[in-house]
Length: 430
Image (cartoon, rainbow, N blue to C red):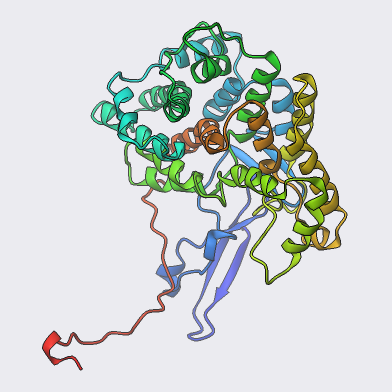
């Protein structure tokens, strides 16, 4: 007999047996989908901190142990040995490709790097100082109109084409967000280049001179894309899944994810870290800001420390800290922000206040420093995050479409408003 948990309603004496589901890894899950039908009750879980919203075979995360795996492969191995496009293939197909499959995958991505020429005019509808995430979300949503009647989301082959379209076009879209803000002409994709080299060329090249990105910079950016590719059922991924459950256009689903990622508590955190380091200004000021963060009456808090899920060191932070140091050394960059960041990390990790609360540096603490070293402005940090995370969003959306328990998402609530009352005409109200 399968394991069950008995739920008893002490008010009525009614009870029900809930199956306990066990995944490949991770804690067991109580199946409560028949709770309302049997006992007439909902569960209450603000922020869904203890709720499994779906079954997924894509990403495994153990916050207590600091583990992150994609399709069973540890993030440390993927970061060291793989490439972003190979990780994209892994997320979407479930297995690593052989040489022929990888060549076909890369070729397929390259056939979708262009966007419709009309979209180039779409950017000019934004203010010159519009936030790039606002532009990116609008453009991706607009692309839905080009594939509105030609995408059958019930067809697996068409879903795969959609994935290639999004992954192929995102560098093009992101580069234009940057170039529009700084007044540079748009650059067409060059499919003779690698994925990251193509993005950097579209972003940083000038019409009047040859541009060759540093191999160190290319590898650092590819690494960041790998680390940001997917992260289980976070806020933006859950948003994409919820939008997808309504069978909406997949580009609109990605746009919904972009909107959620923009929040400073989510993808915007790396931008907030840089703003914080700029405010601190010098290592000698760190202790003052640490003291402020510990003061419950002060609204200031240290950005880039702690994580909703990780209660141990974020494994991505360990990888990215090393990469950040290597990038600055190999490119011979004097990065004062990195010095402040390292000293802040040292002081915070020796302070009992942060140790007891398990406030370790997360991936956002160092990712912004790498972007800054690559001359990517802070406003573009979350755009870079969205470019990479779109791969995970697509994998999660495709998995949702193939779920045998597929149904539209419909969370419930604990109602705390007024009880029923009668309408009083305006002229009779006191």
